[in-house]
Image (tube, rainbow over all chains, first blue to last red; front, side, top):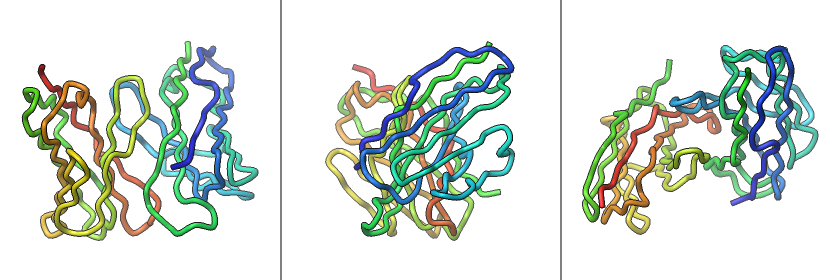
Length: 118
Length: 111
């Protein structure tokens, strides 16, 4: 499986500010996703990061709040905008499928970014 | 609304016992089923996946799938204290890449 890194690993931010989280993969991958895991909860898909086009957002998540970029097949960013304490969560990127390889459905997760908003 | 249900636990078993973790799903069209292990403060780690009815074994882990009953389970043989973690069941359906996660079952293996 691919090696996935995220930066920052954790951050403490003030209300009203924005934070950009980076996800880097050591291989070109077909699909990249962003999830949120609130304290004590399971994972919720925020959006699918599409290379070269706008991300596909799940119900309840909007581009103005969570802008996403994916300039190539190995890198994506998620920005959490105008943060409030309710945005305190772990944000995870995941990847699926090696570009040019056989399709498969397994997803692998990065180490996550723990965000605390004061 | 597609749903994946798990008992939140904790499921407590003695060391060396078999731990049985269960998951049900609502979308009969689901095709792929995954088990992730998540240690406290860490990200989920894929430990098993199964696509066909029946059993799939990998070391101490066995995944079991029954599509007719919309039920998937994970058996952990010879449980070790290091197996203590939250186990997340995930399912995808008509869309090949979206995963829907259950709330997870916390497993405690007592030495």
